[in-house]
Length: 291
Image (cartoon, rainbow, N blue to C red; front, side, top):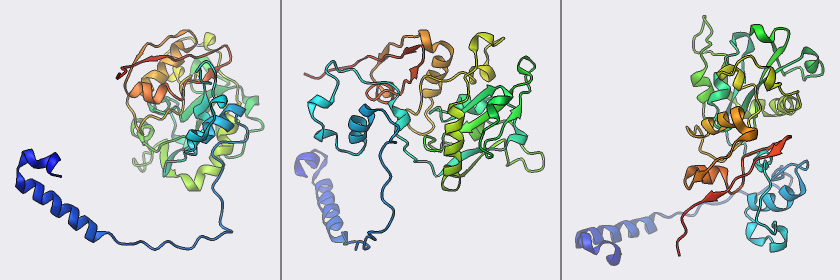
């Protein structure tokens, strides 16, 4: 204590000693409740459908057991598979956005604002929705250049961080009750199982042919599958929506030169850049080394 604070005066040193003594006196034992052996077990860290590398290496790291991994489990050349964030499923949001489709203007502002690519939209042929879950809703497309198609908006309930940005940017309101929008935050626990089924079906819906888009704007760009998804960025991050948009506009022919900072943390070590059927994204970072 004197070593840290003596330069500020003896009075400050004494007050720190007093604070330490009070802290020790205030510590109380918290009795733990007995654990019911028949209670639900913790769900698996990653899905059984995950690739072998994710199940053996990534899952061990997520479980806090990365130090126990042998060197032989890691890629010899130091490269790391892409698209691993889709298997993490953090389930950290208390509330997730639920679509009220009858109010929706199909502007896609909510999709553009999402920092984690956790809410998405697609335009698909009507026959693609024939076997959709009853809870997965769709609308006739309003845009003239896509008439006859179906518009679908869906949240990834296990990947959403609950930042509320999608609701904030939504311009569509109920005229009778302006507090109700076309997308509203609701309890994740009450909707997660249903929305998981919906999202799994949504991901398998056909992607839009970007070459047939008459123009690229916020609405149409958000119909293109992002190549940056479910990153570890903070809830409500202001940087990641721009990176996501870049991957939607130029992703299959884009190279990012990155400097050390937040972008290295949420985008580099365990990549949130996803795998595209035409190619695989790559990431290399250069930072400062202390020797």
